[in-house]
Image (tube, rainbow, N blue to C red):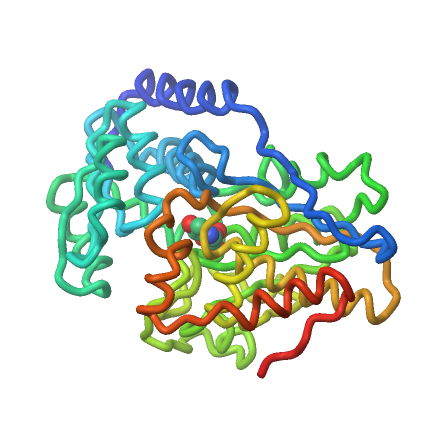
Length: 360
Ligand SMILES: *Cc1c(COP(=O)(O)O)cnc(C)c1O
């Protein structure tokens, strides 16, 4: 760790990562059509169009730059992470770009499709039997091979510059400039690391916007209970079925103080919402986007009933093609005992009347 890395290599590495950003276009802000007479506009920032297919492209870029400027990543550093998901995919991409070895610690139960995607980008998978063993094993592996543990759950909130510097919040506000309600009433996001909600929450305060931040949380997650009780050691110990969001423990990157409201979202509600998204916009997305949409619909129905005009912005976090054999497969839903039919009905009714029927 205390070894000095070649400054010329680090300079070149930073240039390579900046060049990747410079070649990339900003992600779209799509409109989700709502009846015009509500006076409310809903937008989806499409993070699936990043080169590695999810909002974790931003996080991986930030974690690499943070490690480089902190002197933790050099030309022979082995990079280690604990992730079986989109973070590992995006980190593998940047590691290969810099010619660095990347190892991610994953549970043995990880699907072959995900392992194939990580390996497609040049990453190596190191297996543990139980999910909670990922973190100590990643730490051990990093220290054993003189490597650097990227540790998304600790560093997500601080690796991204919340003041702006082309972060996701600054991009949304710039893209909203010519809309009829340019300052959103609500921004709705989920929490996996908690990094995205921290960036939005800090940015809106720093810029003195009136926008409120709503965080949607799936079944079994610890974040909702922690936010409600203020107990950051609140832990369900249960995995989430909505990939990318919901955690068995409260992660260090979760910043509850910048969240105005949290909503608990049933998994069936999330997975019904991505079907409605596809039906209404042609876009298909992962489950966490459905969780976001349920939150957006809930807040919009409240705005309709209060006669409040305005805009709501949420995220399309990753594309649906990664979930063709799960969330979009009726047989998979049946096998998991997830019944989306009642929610499909509620959403179709909501998109006509503006009233979202309550749970139950
Ligand atoms: C990571 C992730 C999220 C949540 O973002 P955080 O910034 O980690 O809280 C949402 N959806 C998907 C698909 C993700 O991979």
